[in-house]
Amino acid sequence: MKISGSLYLGWRHLQRHKAKTALLTGALTLAVFLPIGVSLFVSQAETRLRTRAVETPLLLGAPGSPLELVFNGLYFNQPELAPLTMRQMHETREGDWCHAIPLNARYHARGHRIVGTSLDYFTFRHLSVTQGSQMVRLGDCVLGASVARQWGLGPGDHVISSPEALFDMAGVYPLKMRVTGVLAPTGGADDRAIFTDVKTTWVISGLAHGHQDATKVSDNEVLGKAKDGTLTLNASVVEYNEITPENVASFHFHGDPEDFPLTSAIILPRDHKGKTILLGRYQDRKGEVQLVEPPLVMDNLFTTVFQIRDVVVAALALVAGAALLISALVFALSHRLRQREFDSLKAIGADASSLRALILFEGGFVIVASLAMAGILTAVLRALAPWLVRLVAG
Amino acid sequence: MVHCDGLLFQYPAGEFSLRVASFEVAEGQSVAIVGPSGCGKSTLLKLIAGILVPAEGAIRVADHTLSSLPLPQRQRFRASRIGMVFQEFELVDYLSVEDNILLPYYLSDGLTLDDAVRERARTLATAVGIGDFLPRHPRSMSQGERQRVAICRALVTKPGLVLADEPTASLDPANQTRSVALLREQSAGVGAALVMVTHDHGTLAGFDRVVDLGSLVTITPTV
Image (cartoon, helix red, strand yellow):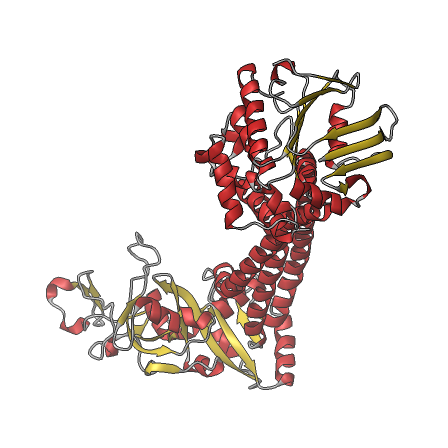
């Protein structure tokens, strides 16, 4: 047997039939990679989503889908959630069984979510400011690491909130916010958010605003003056879209802030007993608010996801089996078509083991190349998985 | 070069048997075997090549009793000492002309491929007029050109014996005589004996002997 000669002939055959070789290699690569890839992706998504869920004991939100609530509270998705009021959040404190952190993740700036919250959120999520300082007044914000890197912004720069309804004259106006700091990267959803005080998000929503001192406007801007001193002003009165040290005092709320909206609130029970009491208390209030345990919601989600994954992987395994059988058939047919070639090689002087080596090399090359390609694809998927999971799951 | 004594060969199904009492080819001699279809011309060639083994009798090629050698040794012997030219040439279409000529060296561990062998392949190719075709693939060549590649492949190992099984059957009449002459010349050039099976009497001129296997009568060529 002349192994080197058999390998050379096998290589030449594969080279001469590039399309067939590429097709077989591609089919086997996909057959191997797809079941592994789906399992890997689901596993990565599960790890990523479950970790953040486990760190968040309870979430309070308006009635609706628990999953949407969890995705809003943890990943700042689903901004269309029905509002939860500040009052409803404060009611959880009754009995002093817990601490509550407000979240208002309804607005965005050029695709990045603006999250209105309190300073407690940063402590809870172990977020630290690496550049600049924490927000100190209304209109300040700190940027997640990815946002700062993507936009090239840092302390002293400004971020303008995106209009929610461009053609709605009575809608939300953009607010220019001052960047006071940039957060250290965490590899999670916080990197892609812009954090501000929850009151600043109410300014964005129009529930709070600042404008020219009404007592100092010209007569042209006054539409009417009532006997009790109330002034009715026309639209030419300047309404501020940036909060500065000079105008911050003019910002005020219209209405009771206790009625102002949040999207959700993170509830941190003092202890296990507090958690149990809270869950019991909100068991019967599902019509008003819902209190959910994010880990359980994620468990439910992944129970379904795993069922789907198992079906998909089983289907892919069947497809892979079919691809393997078809590849084997192609090899067998190819072998049959080449019988005359093999007979000629034997007549010239090739022994049976040389021919076996030739055939094994061709088949082996396709299998090894497919496994290598599948390995490379798996490695690429593993490297890109965090980004893909973010893309898909937010 | 070739000595066959008391040969009996029978295919397993028993539909055909061949008896040859005696058949000899001297070194460097060119012998044409003719005869009606089915008389066993190709079978005799395969017996001499060691592809088939006789049930009785002995075949000696270059002082090796080929019929008693085990298969691997017969294959090694054939690759290094016998050149084969087939009816359909049997070139490997995924190899270049150069690799087709060098094919015995890729198949047999009894042969070593080196620069001298490559040079010999090029010289042979040039001698038969396909020196410029070495990088090409056989499919892009005419039948006559393909046959020259097959002749080069048969001679590249400098064999003592060349066996050709109806090598002109795929050629047009104009090319047949020229091709057989080329095969004879090149075989003589490397000092190889030539045994050619044919049913085309127009190509027999120039052979040292013509054997009618059908009647087991040796006839003299009519030049």
